[in-house]
Image (cartoon, rainbow, N blue to C red; front, side):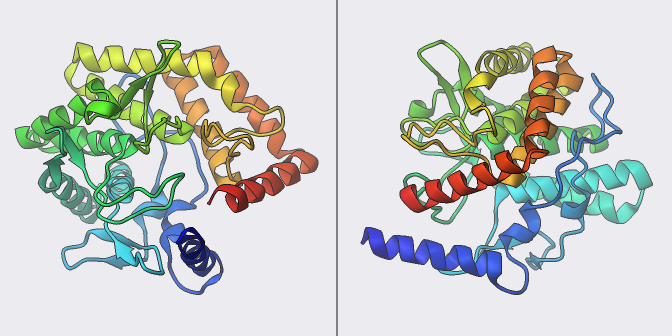
Length: 326
């Protein structure tokens, strides 16, 4: 059975990477960038532009909600993270250009998030993914994500600012509760043996602390605080900043960054895309917090990308990890 699952996984992955037409990778793999229009301390444009995501040319449902085609047995699916990012990209375009079509697309996404925020088995309001996903262990449908929670909040608070519709803010408040609850009790938070607080992109046991998902999730808390001055959101974001400051070195292997803390003998390095995303996220975190460690690691990791031997070593080790553990 395990060999059969691996065969299905590689068949789907090869179809996405090597096949013609649009796949989920078409959406995810835009070039990561810092949004130069961000103003620290203000709820305005999102921290990354997401313009190519706003201009997605893939599958949409009948009311204009983007769907990602995962190929193989999974096929086209709603992904709450992709939906939120599509909405944030359209919000950025609306703020810049005042094109009514972008505002309409953004609010359509906010309404989808409003309608699809549902209680999980513990009664915590989450956005569910309704498809199985191959991770360390297969995530069985339906599953939820700290990353989706954070970016969903980032959409909803901007929709509230745009419309003053209390329903958006109330939904964001309900989604915020997931960050106050441990993963073992239905939330997305995990406090480790060193008392550092993590927000988990994938809720698995033991937690893996995916770096990009942790940072993106934290931005949702920051956005909620900017909107409401909520002290609990501020404290959660501050704790995330402290964790990142203390533990960034754990994601540095001397020639590349790690995608996660997998706990495996062979660590899971970031792909070139996610390594570039880490650099951008750290530059944004430096812009928000002025913590020098974030800028220092961003520059160090950028320097790794300029060294061909380090790039090639990282690529080979990434492939080996996939072959060994997926």
